[in-house]
Length: 200
Image (cartoon, rainbow, N blue to C red; front, side, top):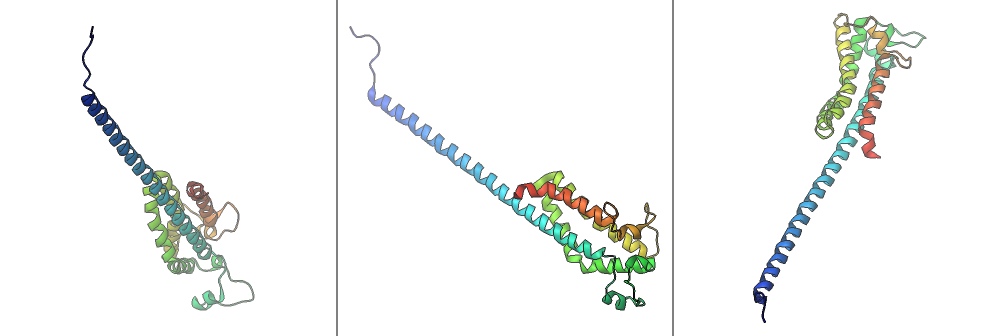
């Protein structure tokens, strides 16, 4: 006695073959999607590493410029350029007339203009690839330069710098934890914390 339905092995074979082909196509599509996803993630990581390197390198150059801008001592070229009377003692910037101090600061800033512009440009990519944390770290470090420039222009024009009774003292303070140079180094340390871990 024959129970059930006859099996069409040819049709079954075609169906199984079709299912296998569909599964194979799905696997290929998933593999392509997963490969593309990994490629994008790898590319993003490479771009972030590149941006971190550029931001840090630019920040170090700007910090080096700030060391020059806020150097408390006048060299022989400065003495000749600004007509400062030479003496046996070392001439300090802070001992000069406030308006001359402002001129010296602005002149020094102009010598470092390329480093300032370069870092200002790098802040944009810092925000693009590292979000607000990257932008904030870069911006706070850059803001110290803007403060120094503002003080320089104020002094040069004989205008008081608001909120600071002794801007010249803070500009050229060598005391650790005080002055704009110490502040820039604190901001640089925060910037390093935001970008250097990716480079380890």
